[in-house]
Image 1: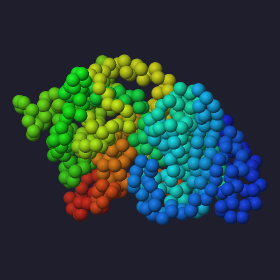
Image 2 (image 1 turned 45 degrees about the horizontal axis):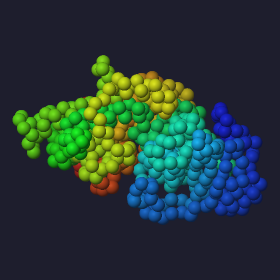
Image 3 (image 1 turned 45 degrees about the vertical axis):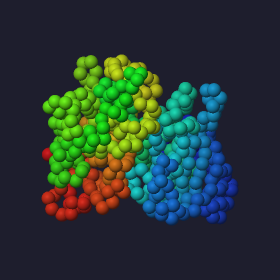
Image 4 (image 1 turned 135 degrees about the vertical axis):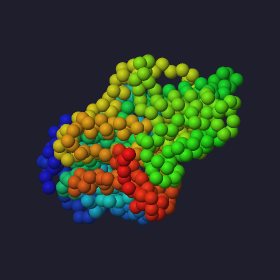
Length: 529
């Protein structure tokens, strides 16, 4: 198979040209077995690329490989023998003498299926995740399916929310833009060299920052990528951060004060208040999907207002104070500017967003757990207009945001497809914001069936809290390569081991048929009101 001809600047064009010229190390050509072929990749030359190691990794039995460095959970299927290649693209000294470069790790399975996957990152990246492709793969990672998988640190080293690299222009550009294309082009070149043929399809899958990177893949590299799974994309963090600050101010204003007069946010709502709120939302909205099961599938049909819990007089155990109700209404509605124009989407009164166990940092309401985003915001006021102006004038924010580019004519024209998904109990980004983006994407590309959006009830940010196992990747491959558009995708999860539910593409939602085992997805149908 000939190498796909792609017009790419710099490294990407050079990598492709080198392959077409048949560039390879003599040691590779003389290799007699997989281990030797793998090790010989250290001699493969690409402009600006250092391959620092290449070694065979033996097959791993089920239950021996962690899902991620942040989890004790193990992958439940075997991972195949593969050649693991590590390297750096465009190594250099930057501001303050700091060493920069786009680090990557590439997994090349011995039994390759001809596909290539860019594995999205998280937060501000800064480290290289294991190239497995676990996200939105239903518990069966891309590597286990035979994909070649690449992961990257996006051009710098640091903790997941360490933004010190932003002071270096190129490092900021690599994080915001360049690393996706450069890493993918490099990985495809090495893959082609190793197998002797180019990948026949290239995909991206990730959540949060990985979701934003997937959107960027479709927007900026439409000739390189064939399909994208974008979960809870961090597509306009300046505005979502305004929403979080707006909510914090609403809660801080009603919170008790310490001796210095600072609010104590964790005392704005007691654990009992949270349970009361979640139970009230469930009473009103849970059965809208035909079944009371602790999950709200008809989220758009849920018009819950916490005012139904407002005490008629003083605060009691079975009601909320007027101040608490007002704070909740303001926080969940999202911020608006001085002209009443929404700045960010509202947040849903999803059950999993209201009753978060103590010690869990993934909470929209104030929590006692340390947040990975930093110390709590203790502000008592916010100038939304000023914040919007600050975001609009932030060059880096404008570069990283992927919410505004809607023209996917080239991507769609080549048969490219994109699947969005978002947890309804995500405390950082609203599922309604992602759903709205997908609707705008459809409107901007009329006549093209190119995208789907799936809401996941009870799921927090990128996972946890409910049925957070679903195979979007397999559905995407079938859509791109077989023309089979995805409809219902079955979700399961370790938090509910006996339950399965269909996730339906918006505006549809899963509705109980009225008969059949209520724990099984087969007892539900996708419908709209």
